[in-house]
Length: 166
Image (cartoon, rainbow, N blue to C red; front, side, top):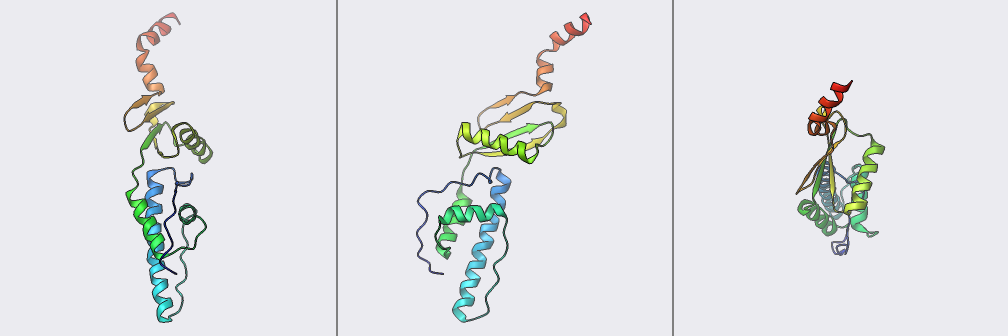
């Protein structure tokens, strides 16, 4: 493994990395990959038996491949990746729903936010059964409450009027 591969000029997190938790897990695994690469290089230099490459999540593999952009992995390129991942400051949008979305729903929501707000955003999903339905969206600067609970509280007088006429 030579140590002189240049850092990729542009890098965008793959769409599969949508949450702060996934980014943290990928950062950890990238660090583990770097440790393995260092150990493998030492084994190669001293003529010891090869160290088997560990298995990593599909998300980590996608990030490493995106970072390397077709180049061979080197110690310096992996160090740069780990450092880059540790220093990323990406805004997080917190989405609170009555129940956690299924994988297809989550994918659809992430795609919508990234299409409309840009790829540089992470999405955190939280469940709160007391909402009854709807959604609360918290951005770094605003809160949007589209929950049924909020709608019922906002229309408290109208609800009493409707029930009175029943």
